[in-house]
Image 1 (tube, rainbow over the protein chains, first blue to last red):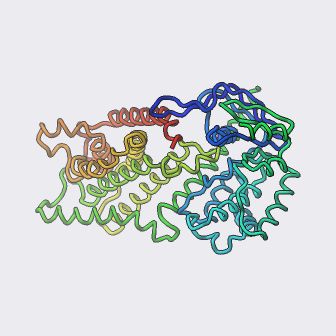
Image 2: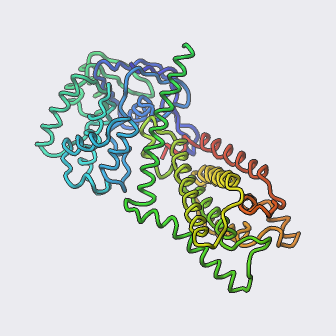
Image 3: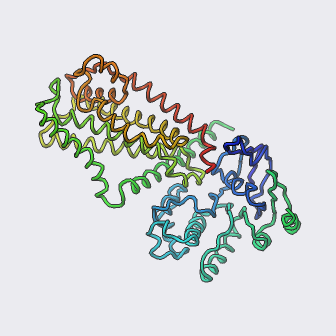
Length: 215
Length: 267
């Protein structure tokens, strides 16, 4: 479970503080798959970064008792001038896993071929996503924080991805931001609607989707 | 929570931090020096070139040797390596967060780690360059070994910390006022001439001394020579003064980093 206690987050702009959340208190389950729905700019990605502890709230506390992934999905975490293998090596080291095994695994999983040793900035966004997904599968988290499941390549890779994803779902859960109703319906057991800096929990996914459509 | 458990927690978080710093240093080595070993040679080329050029210049203007019986090579090498290393440390530290922002996505990587990683790598490079050039000079007979090697090492670390403090403060300032960065190149060039690299403070008229003695870079360079040569007494310079600079710049740098953290993330 991830506990948010009195979380306040704002950004300073020229017009003063822009609040994303004010005094947000909520328990997010990590033993089930959680979907987060909200309009563009509602603060979904900020919420995910706060849950992942990649960004500290201005006030309040975030606590969790499980191993959480880094917030995945946008290209962050990779340095463009370095190769895929270099980036894998770095991530392996900071998570304390064997980097040789990691490079082998990701090479095999993401099928990047010789691109593995070329700078990330030469990658397509699909290749970048495959690299990130592959690495996160290798590190093995209890709960994956995913900002939009990326469109990841051709049908051959998609089959493979779906298969790994299926295995992943057996041992791990995820907290998922998605605009795709089909994805949310297929994966999530619980949905949080994010609106006006407030989180509302719905255990009935269809009801949440219905409300989301009206937002 | 029992005391043993909190010690365990501390141990665990130190392990994580150690792993992060180690990974960052390896990463920085690659981006700083490239994959080939020739990259490391480049770290030597700039100081060697400057030492060479200024030795020739010194000879050309008819000066036989530096004052107080100091030898040429250590006289110039201490100051030039200290100046270049400090400039590198300051500029690498000031851009540490900006150029590695994408890594802050990983919860175990903090802005402090990014700066510490760069500081450690640059300081190690500083010491290595120093040892190679002075050691080479000693072997080839251009220099005698330092009289107080331990004090010299302490002074090298002072120099690195001064560079780190200035770098942190600069980083915090340029984050908000990027135009300040344009003034840094000319400022460092000016510092090359007013930091006692080619002269000693004592050689100057009193009125000039009174101004230059405020420059902390001049302090570390003079202290470095005083550590190298037993016969040289520190003249109007002190470790205490450098201490204040290190403390104040580091404190201000960290404070500004905290204050402007949200503004940074907003981009």
